[in-house]
Length: 499
Image (cartoon, rainbow, N blue to C red):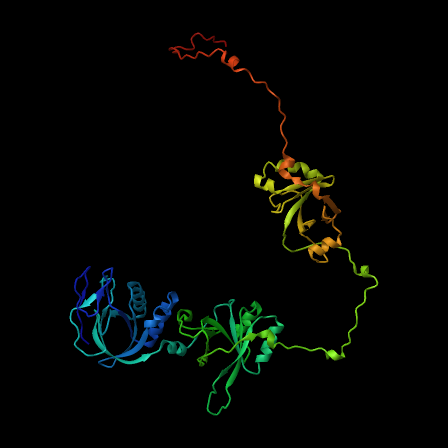
């Protein structure tokens, strides 16, 4: 190994010695490609894990390649090659590489120089180039070395080979789950989900035989649950049922076994076909790869159905009118309810509280007064507004069951019937409003009794007519003569002291 001398590039330096190296608009030395050299495979995984936590590889994938290089003395290292494109991309990768113990270079073909750092904000340039025919020549302030490419490696294969890490510290979260069941447990699992009223999609996937001694493909049931109930999440996450495995989707076309996590953010690595599915398993087991996902159907289509007797054995019995239809009628009751208040559009004010309404109207805004209607009766006052009466803290609030039917807020009517059915059952005329009160019975108010609140409360003050004076009489009044005179040194000398 020999030391190479690099020179720092100055701002707007006119000439560079490294082939393919140029200056961008900011004056930073940048080639067409970028390289990150890492000493081992675990450093590569660390680089990808840190980078994909905040960045996506979608823009890098078209130009990204991984290869194993070998130096002249037989030392093997890993190179990540990608299109440089901008200093923003290079800075992000250089910072990540520096964290995991890698070196970042930039260049175009064979010669790559160290990328910029705090010591050289505009980058470096090689003073002397290597005359070797090696595939790569790297120039760094710590070393200068040539490498040959030994072999290429695939990022997708690397992701599939990485072992999952246990991740039992996180509680089960809401989200989709994929259940894989062995053939004998598939129908029972489907029946359990249908009985629990859980919506899901199901299919049967096939894999090639595991050995030459098997003459039939391996079949497993695949159930995709969009959002399992909370009571099932802990059970699915634990994988406590032998023969049933639970997976959590982590990206398009890929899922990780529940209770484990992949070292790299898979959602930032769009390498898997969305039309297929890759199921990554924990404990070092081989992943299950489905190149093309079979058509999935609704789980209800596979539910167990029961048939009644043959239609030919069923005799049609004509229905006849009931002798006494009124025998089924039950009285309508008002009972306390725990449901939240809704449609509180009226209030009933007792006669002894009507004087309070006179005071409250002074505090109500004009917009509230304009929306309200009021009707005065001998039994009380009813105020209603389609926009709600919560702004009027007076009386007993009423819930609108029907435009002509009200019950006290916090109560409900039994039996629970449709509003129109209740109106017909109560024989409610169009010209009346029925108020069912909890203790004092039901009362009706004529629709014509309601008047706008602003009209009802407006009372003109008493006024006295005054005659206007003639203008000439007003002008005849003597004018005042105002003068300012000095008060002297003793202004109070002549004032009577006894006063």
